[in-house]
Image 1 (tube, rainbow, N blue to C red):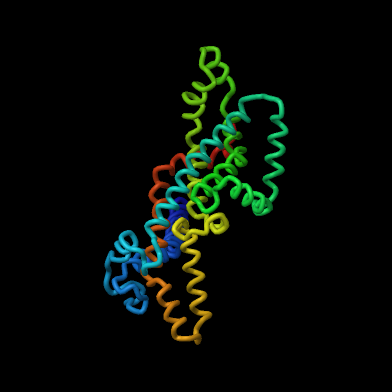
Image 2 (image 1 turned 45 degrees about the vertical axis):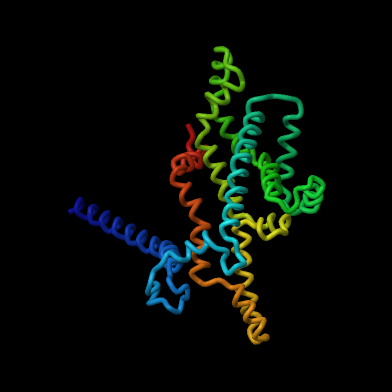
Length: 305
């Protein structure tokens, strides 16, 4: 009886757990499913929906995004490629700089090492916008303003300041491995490429994914350094869509000509949802391939002994 009671309590606990997980999954997944379904709406208008989903489905939205300038004003394909270019270059360069900085600060002892460490810790306490004016002046002097390279340059230069996580992982690798490889005649370059780097793939994946996602979603610096709309990243375009909707609501009751202009600038609802879906797609595609490294890297330091 006692054994059966324990089994029954465990069964009830399992049922409640799965029910709760199912409810939470529906709450989180339903908006995503609805967003994807809405992006395939043939009419592009939410008023044509039957319940929560469109009456007719079509891939015309995605075809138009990559074949034409939307409304003759929004070159989505160009903005998508701009974002991919900036995020990819920054991810590669930033990850490389962080790895090298972390390795040098972890394995080498040199004059000024502690000063550099303390300085980076001190700089990390200040918000980034405090140096915005100085950085803008430097960008102008280097001739990088109004170019995608300005974003890559800025993101890459600030990346090494986050080396502490990588350094902490390198510190966890036994120094006896370093000594044994040195005794066997391995150079510092060979030690790094053949031993340390393969052992550090989990944390490298974490840092790479962090930079890729962070700079894929960034728009603030583009707003400062870019004035040519053809160079805009995708997230700045999404921001402008939100502002356009707000302006349209504010201008209700104005002249018909102004309202007609605002309606032309507006996008169909399905077009907006399609842009959001495509904006999220690259990260969703890449994450499954890095998931095992990402989870392992996040668990570093959580287990002792």
